Length: 512
Image (cartoon, rainbow, N blue to C red; front, side, top):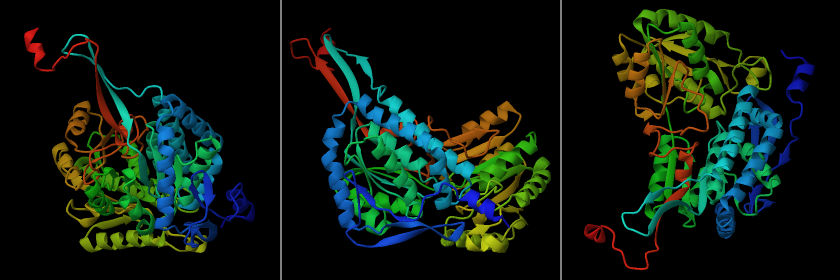
């Protein structure tokens, strides 16, 4: 049991409970519904973080109208000047990194070291986007005709509607939002109802940076009440969504009638391949971090591991032993290795899948139960769980669990490992542990995923490279990196003829 002094240390510098409001047209305003909802710490039900607006369609439309009104002014603001705002946001987030991370741990549950990383991603994205304000390259090409100049430029789309998840509650809004803003779009964002404070804190940073009113708007509330009206509103020109594949499919259908631009980042069932020649201890380190970082609540979590027969038993034994030694608890406690599931429903999902795994005949070699003793009874905690003797067609090896559960399978060859790895409907992240460069390159070529690692786990993407996946993980777009700009802009090809005469492309060239 932590001492009183330790408890006080864990909660130092946290915000007092308060009523948070929507951010619309540069003002903090209450919902027209007059209703609010509570946000509580998943590690401690008694800890009320605050109340947030239970918004409705009128609130969404007011935010969209504000963004629409602000669009022309923001679009015509030179991109380097837009970038200056984002650079200032990066500086503010860097200054307040510790405070923001503590609130995020309290709100979302993952350990403080991880929430600091979450804030750092937002900082990195702010700086990256700021750089693109002076570097938003198009192309210039020689014309096929004399005295003619050809080039391409990016155009913003208009109002961008962002629907963001709870597992990376400031990093993912920053991935989307910074790219949208530097391209010249205005934004209406609906944060996940489980983690609205993180997006409020991002809005506070944008406000402090002096962003013009209406350029960034936050509306909290449920998907039906806030998300669906955003999809229906014709003033919203692009939707960027991160969440489940099932919801993403519904959003795709909703956007189709009005031909809204749409970016979907959805589920994953990621795999680590461990070959006979691997450094087994390094692979265990990677699997432990990949499977149980953020309590497995990452779309890139290593929820599958395929180990070759020569190292399988050794790998399973070491992974199970290490998993059992992980300390589970409040993420503000520096001794904690893994925090809670984010909600009661997410914990129930984990429990259901553990039962499914046992019923399917897999061997539960570590964990397998919720944690309900002492202070843990006030949160949504589950043991880190490892299944062995898993068959590739079992549900725990096919379906996204989004919890601290990983399934270990045996293979006889690299080819079989790749076949198992590709044998799911998702294609987000994969990795291989091997000392053989030839095997690494074969797997790099043949694994059909949007992200691939060598001698590292399936988590750990950096913001300057594209992030996204194949198959039912996404719809072909990427976020972060320069690729993120493609979601929030369209290309315009421009031809300038200064010959003083009519020149016909593809026709007059024949006479030269």
